[in-house]
Amino acid sequence: MPAPLAHLLFVAALWFGLGWATAAHAQSTAPLPSWTVTISDGVFSPRRLDVPAGQRIKLILKNQGPGPLEFENGDLHVEKILAAKAESFVVMTLPPGEHMFVDEFNIATGELLIVAR
Image (cartoon, rainbow, N blue to C red; front, side, top):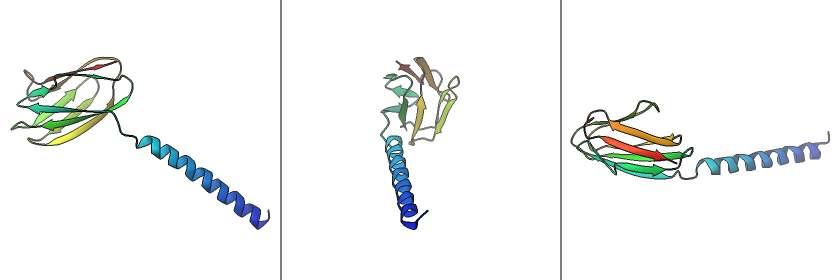
């Protein structure tokens, strides 16, 4: 194969490959729909969220209480422990239905219902 043709094919392959990679990267870095949940003294605020089912979502968790919390849903295998005054997040995809999340350290008061539709 002549050198100019080989060079042209190489440049075309590189150009198309980078174009596809850039498009894929742009899709993967789109911001996720997010909700902020504040936990103070074992009480979630808000106590209920409505979110889209089957779509990746981000929950931002802010522990404003004096002690740690354990955000958990055993059926979905979601668990996050936050120290006092800490902030973190959880990214998940929820199937349709109602999903109860609890603060394992405050079972009596720490409940968050997430309804995925």
